[in-house]
Image (cartoon, rainbow, N blue to C red; front, side, top):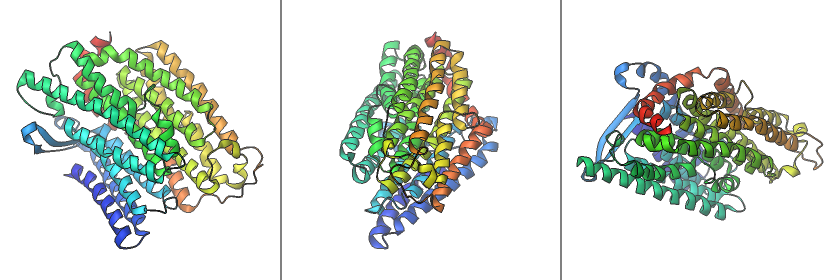
Length: 501
């Protein structure tokens, strides 16, 4: 029941935010949204504290909680939610970034605030559903649920080119979703043809008998949908526009949560459901991931728009998650999960900083900054901190994730590991360029800006504390993910590696 509650709270909180703004007081919507996200965060942390003992029970199978109920039994559709360590970590990340998103929207969103928080909370509800659903029809339902509110957030509260960015976002994500829908239906009907059982249940569909070519085509349907969302080159072109034109909260949710749904789909569905095809396709996927690592880093260095630079760093950082997943060993999978969490926090913080600067200066053009350290020392310190976190300095969560991925990848493909390692150098270049262009130098434009407020300090300092915690003591995250990683590995490892060889 707790899993249903995690989704219902966000759905109900979104509706309540919209209603109270229209019927009570215009400023009440953000308080309702903050309370909703705060309750969600408390519940998820409580679940994490409970998980240490619950998942240690051998008979539990690594699932912390599960709920299953009939939904459309005529078509084999059930309301099946379950949580293991991976989904738990990602739900906690979603709840935390939900609080951050409400906080960074506090003064930015002035018009139709109730509808804005409705869309924000429903996007989070869809993402939580994606991380928990183990019925493929239900998974697709939540996948679509989180896209429509995000489209409205970009189209209504975005910046100058919001219409272009929102339509591009919608076309890419909905178009790729159709590939996944066709692949889901093909898998279900093939399973029905061989067993006589019509079902969308994840566990029932595992090990569905099919020819290698059929398995490959269906796997590609899932892969394309997840590749667009991750994003994997060349399916990434919607991302810089969406990030640049979205309001700050939209950018935070996009980078911190929605991109993780793609990597989660690769880990949860692509390899376990299609181990032979994934093994055959693994060299291509890892090559695309490595290309994304370098491509994103080089493109980031060439940007003059703060948010666009951070967007391209996401392409680079999530390339590590892709190669880690398809390398498919304990080192690389642990690193991929750690990279997903660390990237969500550090990149989300950079978008918060970009939003603060834009709110005060009405520009994101880094050529118009310089000398900001002298007028906003607390913001500049946070900018330096998260820039070096993004470039993977030891002691930060990003370093742990990328190091583990490279360790795991080197055992599978040393050439790609060497190529990916080059990104450590390129990330230093764009990270230091960001700091130099915005914060250092002379204040030639005469900026007179007030530094971080108490709310902004609380937001950024908490994100900095988590980044340090992930870097200095990552064991709790790795332990929580480890048992959950073993499940998919045990399902797929034999066939996956035979296909990869």
